[in-house]
Length: 248
Image (tube, rainbow, N blue to C red; front, side, top):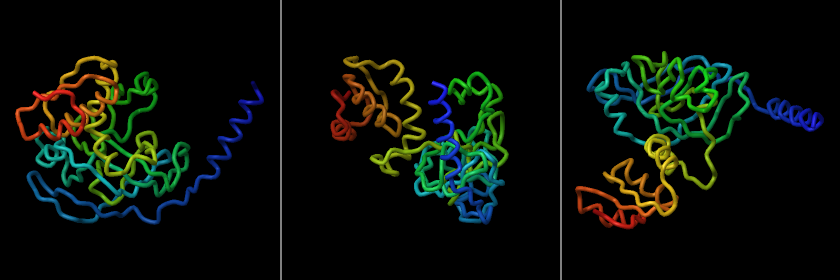
């Protein structure tokens, strides 16, 4: 047992040693930015914070558009800081890693959602519930309030820097365009469906929008008998396409 642990540790150290840690040559990137409340997006340069020891830099290739981005653009929730760089359904490729990064390496395709960091040491973080971090998580694009980050920057930027534990490797079979919406809309509906929906259960999904159409597909995949509830008859064909059993 001791030999196995020693061998695993040696392999882990070797794997970390093989990671290319060439530092970025610049902190500058370009980003579609909202300069002020109710403002329009403009393309301008942005200076990223220094790459931390446990951070990764990601070259963004895809970003989903969530209605939350519109709320953030207009500061509807009072947590926006301007200039604002929206986008929290981010997919890209790791380009640089910090000195102590061990989970990722340059060239990996990853996804980033609403959270970019947390304390990493409280009971909730240790249990994998960083969204309940005792000292509050850091929101990717949140600039004001308890969940603010000092350098909020979303996927409307060419490059983003986040904690390595908040950049998730993506399976090869999942395209980047399909993956992006799963990082917010998908994550929002996945947890309750995974927690409560069982095979053969009758489930109603009310509202077939950004979240609803993902929830239908997840519930169907988990073996539920799904009824889609919508105020629009125009979505009937779409609901059938994504295998809803009934439409109301």
